[in-house]
Structure formats: C-alpha cells, structure tokens
Length: 523
Image (cartoon, rainbow, N blue to C red):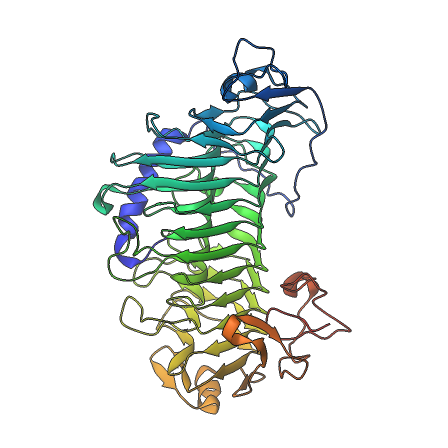
C-alpha cells in the first residue's frame, strides 16, 4: 500500500500486527457472500444515558446518567440504545455484548451534542480507543474519536477497530482525527483511523462504514480507513478522508491479516460516494515518504470483487489504484466507474503490480466512465510521467473504456510500462484531450501521433483525440459536460452491471441505450 522502496518494512509490521490480533483460524473455506447490503436499522428497546458528569452508581436515566461509556455498555442488551451526552470521555471503549437481528445495541451521540472519546492521558497500546470485537449487531454513531498518539515502536495506533468475526456492524457519522503513530519510519510506523480486520476463520459480513470524517491522522505506512483480511460484504459510503498520510481508503489482501490464504483478502465490497483529498505522505513531523508523494486516495490492493464508484479523489499522491503489492493475491474482478479524479501529484488511475517487486497484478477489472483531469503534477519514482492512466506489471484482461482523459500539457494520457506478464487488455472508446500536447507510452514506445498510438498498441480504434470535452467550469473543477460536448452519447454500453445504473450525481447512467463518456450523464 506504499511505494516501491518501503514495501518490505510494511509487510514485516503487518506480520507483527497479526500476532497481536489474530486467533481461531481454521483451514475450512467459506463460501463468498452475494453483493453487500447494509444491516436493517435497529429497533427501539430500553434507553440508557451516560454523561461525563454522571455516576456509575446511578440508574442510567436521563436525569441520573452513568459516568462511563464502558459501564453503560455492560448494562445494555439487544435492542437497547445508550445515549452519550456531550463532553469528553477519557476511556477506551469495548462493546461487551452482541445485539441480534433487528435489535442492535446502539451507542449514539445525544441529539445536537458532541461526545468525545479522547485518548489524552491514556496508556497507549495496541488496543484501539474503540474496539468492536467478537460481537454482532452493533451501531456506533455520532462520536468524536481523537488524540490517540504514540512514539513507541511496535505499537499499532488505532482509533476504531472492528475484528474477530464481528458482523452486522454500523460505524456512522463519527469524526476520527489525530490518531498518530509518530515513531521514525525505520521503526515501522503504523496506525489507522478506522480498521476492519478479518483475522479469524469467521467472515466479517454486512459491515457499513458511512458518513464518517477522518482527518489529520499520521498513519505511517498504513491507512486512514482500512478493510483487510476475511471481510466478505461491506459498504464504505459517504465518508470524507483528508489531511492524512499514505492511503485514504483501502480494501486489501495478502498482509498477514489472516493465516489462511483463502481467507486473507477483502471481497464483495462497495466503496462509493466518498471524498478523499490532501492525502500526502511527504507531510507531517516525520514523513512516511521522503522522496515524493506516492499516497493513493482510494486503493484496492489484493482484494476481489470490489466496486469503486461515484467517488471524488483529488489533491493527493495518486488518485485510485487497483493494484497488487503481494504475490499470490491479485486485484481481481473489480470495477472502477463514474469517479472524478483530478489534480493528484502522480497518476490518476493505476493498475498492475508494483514495478520490479510483485507478480500478482490486476486481472479482469473494468475502468469505465471516469473523468480524469490534469493529474501528474510531478514525476514518478523513476523520474517518469506516470500518466493519467498507468498500467504496470501483470495487467491481464482489463477493460479501460468510456473515460474522459484530460491531460496537462506535455503530459501522458496512458502509460503502459514494459512487462512480460500482461496480456489481453482492451483500451477503447475514450476521449483524450489536452490544452497543449500530450503523449501515449506503450511499453518502450512513445507516441505523439494518435494514429501511431493506435497502431503501436493495436487497439483504441473508437477513441477520439483533440476534441474538447467542454466541461461546465474546469477552473472550479465543475467537470459536468455541456450539452454540446463530444462526450455525449458517444460511449459504448457494456451493461448496467458494469457501467452502473447511476452516474456520479445519482442520475440514470444509461438513457435510451446510450451512455456519455466520463462520470456524468446528461439528462
């Protein structure tokens, strides 16, 4: 989940992490779930109250609330709601009981108040500020989770952790910030704002992470919002992730989250309607990246059957990656569609294995109907322009179609790196445009002429070059297209399953069997 020079450091740290969190593995394979659906909303049971000015000897009523959240949760049963009044709680929270179907245990902020779970003054350990472990049917809503910081090597600093087979979990509308691993990079810096870790032989299902704001976290070589291991069926929706190190959002596999290879990757997930920006590994008191900003906004790394749609990713290192860093764990059968990706330091959308490092690569994935605008602000790790779309090692049978690819002057539209392991990739029906001149690179050949490009890579016959897509207001990054845009009705319909049923705005994606190029559909 990082660039080429520090992959091994991260793998070692993840192996250490699994020794702290994993147990109860078996070699019995589990059947993959169908497409994820959020659990049913909780029904009303008893009501309990907790307040920083309360007393754990009280009755837990609104007039006589408990003092600590942990104590209040011991009194909650299936269907109950614990209302947290505003103020600061200096305690680590662990849910001790499960709810059941239609009767969640809910821990929720009192309306119009701001309860804060604050790590200031607590002993920092591998235990998160909020832990949801070995329980089911839990909803955690409306809190601030903050100020959990460590400079001690070997500690994974986490705001919220879900693990150990927990299912039917909802983490919604929380603010997670200043979760910081501040050790030096050589000591394996790692932390997460929110971590979902499938570390047992029981799959985690029906996980909903929605409407959260994650910002100003120093995660080192890890990520701000992570889905890793045996997580089968999840939705990551409507979150805002910004001012963070390394990766914004990741669905991962191959990182020792689970000792059984068949379980050790996330699957059947939806990453949608998120806004990710200002993810920069070169910032912070101890930067994770010394040379350049390689942090990816939204990343699928060694996971399978993940849809990344209707997100906005900008002002980060790289935009969206469907990449594999680990041998034996290809990123496979994923769809990246109807996203806006602009103004990122390096590539806009990235496929393949890490250069000179891994062999798994990217297989049977679709990159369709995205709008990419003026990425590649700086050169890449090898001094090259990575390209608006970048294909590295072991890209096999992927489709890149119906995208608007608007490159900076003297930049690169598509860059396919030299590779002996890739084949069967289809690039077509895209709209290429630049205010100046831009090139294509296919393996070791650079093309300035569009016809030469098509002949050299043996494809892309139905794409166009040099036609302005006519964005509404590109100066303000309003990348809707005007009615007279050459992108209108010129895309190729694959299917609703691949192209999606709605565009970036939620409007119908395919109208009268026609589809526009880019992320937006004119109505």
